[in-house]
Image (cartoon, rainbow, N blue to C red; front, side):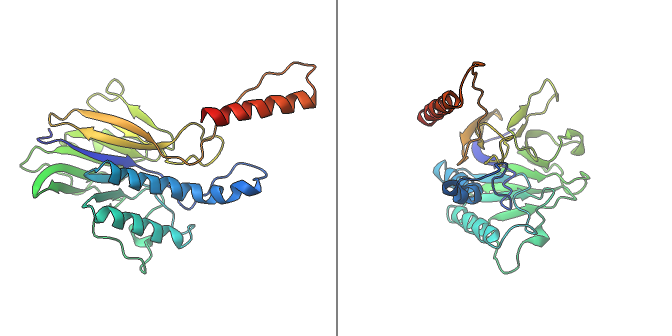
Length: 272
């Protein structure tokens, strides 16, 4: 139960080491954006955190593979974390399949507002506002063991888990919101499928290839004083992949097809 309302941004799967791909011949004017779109989308997320004055940000894993990323990634993240630190916004980061705390470059200082939860054990932090405990944040490790216990206060619990949802790993803990990561598409598990569980995957903020079509973004989570949770999806992607089907007649010429493609492309530009 939440005694006082709060809000936070829930995001995951930045994959800053992975540029856009899936196009055989990338036009010259799009090459820079194929490289920079993941960084621009993530920067937009941190700007949204500041704009909405959230209490904290949840990163549910697979933020960056430092073995594949260039040095820019760590410096970029440190700068974004520092922007939040200046406004007193905490960051709770659960390790995923590829982002490990020990891989963070020693030369790049990680700001003090960042709390990293290890992938192999469950640990918890108490989020405080003005010295008053507001919420319990639990990073759920792969084995579910560790320090994830009740304390004397009945705090609203946000459990961060990467991969498939397993609500049985925290026995005795009444979780109000499962912040999931590890899926590039956004979807929510309602109570009908998992009784008593409210779990959400925000998806990656930037689709990487044509198969990751539709708009991608971040989830703003509002927790009311009575514990009711409301989700608000906010677009963050820089490039949106779209699937389009154009019907043609059997006798259509190559020129007819070009005209139809040009017309539909112009319509899509106007619509977006």
